[in-house]
Amino acid sequence: MHFECIDASGGQLNRDSTSADLATLSFDKINPVTGPVYVDGAQPGDVLKITIEAFTPSGWGWTANIPGFGLLADQFPDGALHIWDYDPHVTAPALYGDVARVPLKPFAGTIGLAPAEAGTHSVVPPRRMGGNMDIRDLSAGTTLYLPVEVEGALFSIGDTHAAQGDGEVCGTAIESPMNVALTLDLIKDQPLAFPRFTTEGPVTRHIDRKGYEVTTGIGPDLMTGARDALSAMIDLICTTHKMDPVQAYMLCSVCGDLRISEIVDMPNWVVSFYLPRVVFE
Image 1: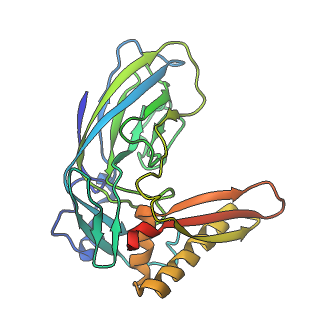
Image 2: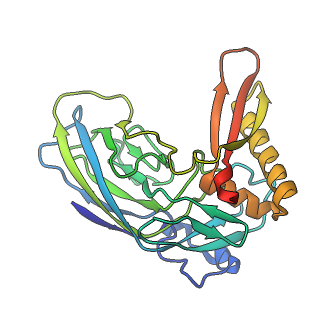
């Protein structure tokens, strides 16, 4: 099947948009998906197998710091927007001003099925049947398995990204309209608690070439540790590359990775933030 996916703003932002346009965004239109697709024979207790075949990117996208959204929303209260123009064949990195070059890895941020609960549900939070998971490795060549909760499964996809770091820390990636080709198969009577997927490796082959700069956050709370690790990386980028803090924040969101490095040595846990050095070559 082939799906046409618009950007996460629902078409409200375009190549000519500026930071001022963030103030007029209608959040009722945010994160649209294409669907739902009714899958014949699908019943609760089944699994939908999604083979992601290919992406056809549009060649443009946007990254924004939206006030009130993101891991460091309290530190970055003002809106900021970066418009990207990139090679739609994704053979070259996308330019981030004259400072950085971000390697691309297209994927769908939102891919999921309908929940069993009655009523209208926001598409923003992910759920056990998938949805807005923002997993960078749901790229071409990956096979995703989702638990079916309703008759027909009701599959939808959208929120396509040209690149993103693990964590999507400022709340947005390179949000980009693109087309997606995939295959749906039904696996009967195979209960699944949460989504799982099989993907090709190495999963960071597009950014590994020059190594990483890494900062950490250490303490009894994982969320605080993540914030500390990210804040330290933003400070490092600003010091080393003379970048504005909000620009560094958005760069971290599209190419840097949050990782839990240690979660067993009570009472403190270690969260690390990895920034690929290739973006500054």
